Length: 215
Image (cartoon, rainbow, N blue to C red):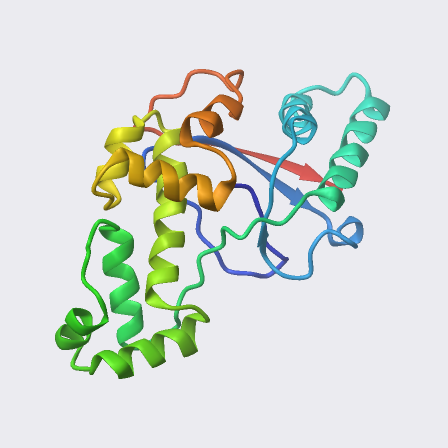
């Protein structure tokens, strides 16, 4: 799930199972109309192909005019990219941080507000209220989004639908498929078929990162 991060925003990038990915570093002067805040968006097949081409051109100096056209097309595609409801809000401090960190490490954890509240020294009602105030959604909604993000990462890393379902806390693969389809509009199998297979072979336990500067 590609994302736009504005200049000056402190951030980290990681992967649960390892991945190959590319970072575009855009000059502020060409960012107008792309994003005023960080956002996760959908990448079209054309944009994906243009990013791969731009990464290759970083090592070539033969045709600057062609490289410029590729860059302009990338910027145009970024302006047309559709935002996705896939961002995972994160609290800044307090017991809600501990709760979110624990669930991120183990999305299969089934504890609800009452059980979490008991461990954090809060009533279920107080925890639910503070979670909603700091995150902007309920614990159930946040956990559902977390599981979706983890599922996409695991499926992209080569995990089976069944393994992914159980690892993120679903009692059956059919329940996971239903939830995944409800959130994305497609089954996990259909989602995997849409992913490109021409990015090269990557060891699923390693990460590969490339930077492309656009100015």
